Image (tube, rainbow, N blue to C red; front, top):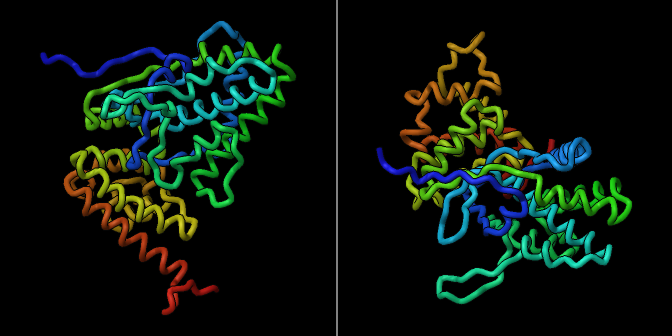
Length: 328
């Protein structure tokens, strides 16, 4: 039996952010809303209040080692939120007059570039074009830009939720300090690291196989990328983003569109009453690879989604001959 290239390590927030993480553009953007961020903070506070000496398990993240960095394949929502939490901890420490050096090194660090020159970098880098500097602004305590994208706005929303939560629940450093220590040392997860991005994508699918942890639209995207070569990721991601952009233009939920798309193009007669429910989409996709070519012809499949999304969007908000939108 060959040697495995998969490594499992137990991490706390303190140890995890001694490394550098990159979220590539082909991965989904930051999608957590205020309610999800607040729920995470409440869960952490409940665990702290119950037993501050007991580790609080946050699940797993999946990474692929690349040039000394960890490319995130699964867990980017949680890790991005924890990076934001670190930024807010630093802000509050500074207000309390506490030295921030220990937090600074978890937010920013030094590594060698391709020429062997030391460079200072943030521990988490988002490569999505519309949010590249948002985490830097949050880390520096800068205000929200007026022209921030939707995804960038969610990042700033998360920072505001975290800061308000901490201010509401901790009156001073005497109360806040032990909670900050709990966040750093007792919030734990398992990092599953591979040496190959395709292996990481397959690991991601295995972990989320029952479709309970993620939206089926994200699981479908992962399955698509599993079936192309890494040098095709950028092209496939461009096509995928075209689908999502069309749906965002008409405020349509991608999951609902995917359900309509599958029911319109493929045979779902074996489903109860011939209707595919949203919670059955992932299972249906896994069982119907022959008739649904997301694995055998991923580009063709996404092109079909793109054409249907464009047609649907134009029917819902038809454009006039001058390129504008006709109002009802």
